[in-house]
Length: 293
Ligand SMILES: [Zn+2]
Picture 1 (cartoon, rainbow, N blue to C red):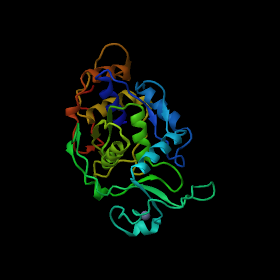
Picture 2: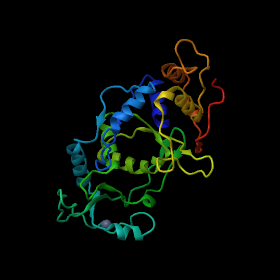
Picture 3: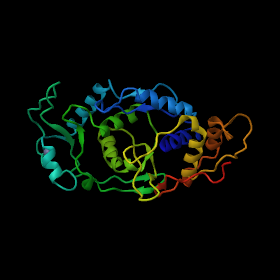
Picture 4: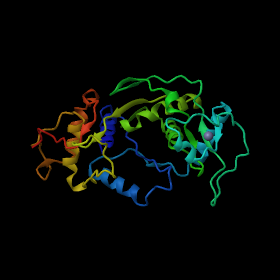
């Protein structure tokens, strides 16, 4: 929710387009009906996207072409390390299979996984420096992050590759997302460079954490499902968490349970959007708007 509100306002504040992409590259985990539920919830909150929804299924040919480019640049290798072996090692992938540039690769079949996963070789590459609009200059150690998978043994293209190809194809200029993806950014930047894409601007939002133990909120740790009937309250809470100016509680026109309607809240928030006010530290999930009545 926080990422949806922040990215929406960030785009609308400069009259930009806000695109909705369903990142369903992991088909095994895509829950049927989940897309519809997300769309309904966004609409209930007044978060209307521009253009068509893009899905990552049916885009294998584009990802395949990108993989081919990586092969031509001699940046990929075939890895048949077992999960057990990798689990036994602490830290990033240690580059065991880097010398395996060509092999008798057997693609996945309905009954069996592929003979190898395909990894991106980070060796010899400098850690990319990038300016995060919230966190400032970032340089994460690429070697410490290690060689990452671009195609999995179950033949699915990895998130890192899919997202970079889709961003480039959609002409994305700005990415606003949670700080849990900060460590993916150096991988995505090196992919962009090898594939000849430009690098978008990044803004990584603080994570929501539990008031008590500081653990990250997730479905597993009891993040509550948003109630679309409380759209206005949800939006105001998100704005407060993002450090933004809140609209006056007694706004004119339509009211929803005593609060301004979602459209009014978003119109006000778009006008007053200030990325520099977003906190850098994790946000307490119990934080509530102080001056909304
Ligand atoms: Zn390996």
